Length: 491
Image 1: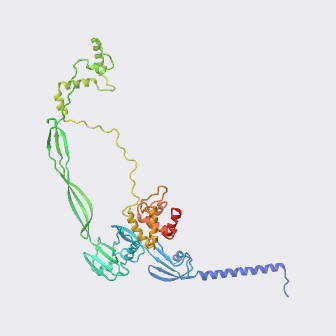
Image 2: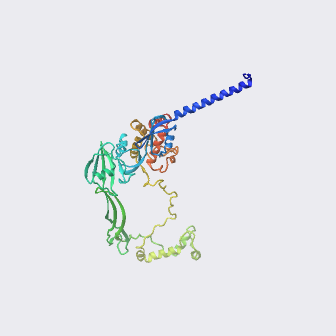
Image 3: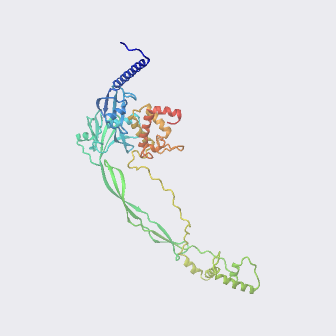
C-alpha cells in the first residue's frame, strides 16, 4: 500500500534531495581542489636539485613547508607566476658577503655569484669603466670568506712574488689553487681576483710593516726688544737664533715592497729652538710745546668756562677752592695735580724720563667681552666609518657598486640604463642628496630616509640595496619604474 501524497511529505522529500545535491557538489569541489592543489615542484637550492610534492599555493608557502630560511639578500626565482603551478621550478640562491675593491676602497658586497669570476662579470655587464673593481678574499683558509670558487669556466692566472703561472682548473677555491702552486699566504697578505679582458687573475700581495723616523726642523722665532742705551732707530743682535728639531715616527705599510700607507705613531721635540733677539733703540722724543709757568695754570685748566679776572685776591680765593677740590676724587677727568706734577717733571727731568720709559711698552687693552663659544656643536656622524659598507661614495663609486648589484637582479642593458636615468634625476647618485621639499634622502630618495635601515645617512651600500629592493617589489624592474616616473614625476 503506497503512502498518500501530502504537501508536508512533498516538502520533506524536496529538502532531502537538495541536501544530497549540495553535499555531492561540496565533495566534488573538495576532490577537485585536492587533485588540482597537489603538485610536483622542482626545488633547487644553491645548485642542489630535488623534486617535492606540495599543496602550497605560493612560492613563499612552499619554502616554509621545506624549512628554507630566506634572508634579505637571498635570490628566489620561479618559472610560475604568483600562484605556484604544477611542475614549476623554484630556484633559491643563498647570498653571502664577499668583498669588492672599488677605486682602492674595500666594500662588503652581498652576492649570489657562484664564483669570483661571475661576480666580476656582474660589474662588467653594465660596462662600468669609471672605476676599477676587484674581488678581495680576506682569509683564503676560512670556509666562509675563502670558499668562493675563482673561475667556474676556465683557467686562472696566478701572480705572486713577482712570478706568473697558470692554474688550469678554475673550479677551485683560492686556497686550493695557491696550495697547488706551493704559495703560502701570511695573515696580513692580500688575495684578490680581477679580470683583464677575458683573463681571470688571482693575485697575492705581500704585506709587511716597518717603522720610519723623520727629523723635521723647527724654525726659530725672532723677538724685538727696546734698549734705551741705543740710539733711536739703531738695531743690535743680542742673541742669534737656532732651529730646533722634532722627531716623528711613522708605522709604514708596504705592499709588494712599495709604501702604501704611513701612520704617525709618535712625535717628540728633541731640540728646542732658540729665539733670535734683536734690540732696537727708542723712538725719537716728540718736541713738547713750551709751558707757561704762571701760577694760574691750575686755575685756567679747571675754569675754562669762567671769564678771566684781573683781581688778584679773587684768583687767590679760586686757587684755595681748587686746592680743596683736588683732595676729592674727580668725576670725569684725571687729577689736575697729577697733571701739573707730570708737566714739572717733564720740564725739569726730561732726559731721565725718557730713560725710564724707553724699555716699557703699552700693552693692548684686553677685550671686555670674551668670544662666545658656538652653541651648536658639530653633528657627529650617524655611522661609524669603519663599519660602513660604502662610506660616503662618489657618484662613480656608487654607480660601480649598483652595477654589480643590479646585474644580480638581471638588470642589464636597457634596464641598467633606466636605473641610471632614474637615480640621475632623483639624486645625481649623491649619498647626501636631501630633498628640501620633503624628507626624501639618499641615492634612491627614500621617504623618509630612515626606513632604509641602519647607516642610511652615510652608507651608500645601504641606500643602493634598499633602492633596488624597492624597485623590484613595487615595479618589478627599472624600466617600469621609469615609466611611472615619467607619468607622475616621481616613483
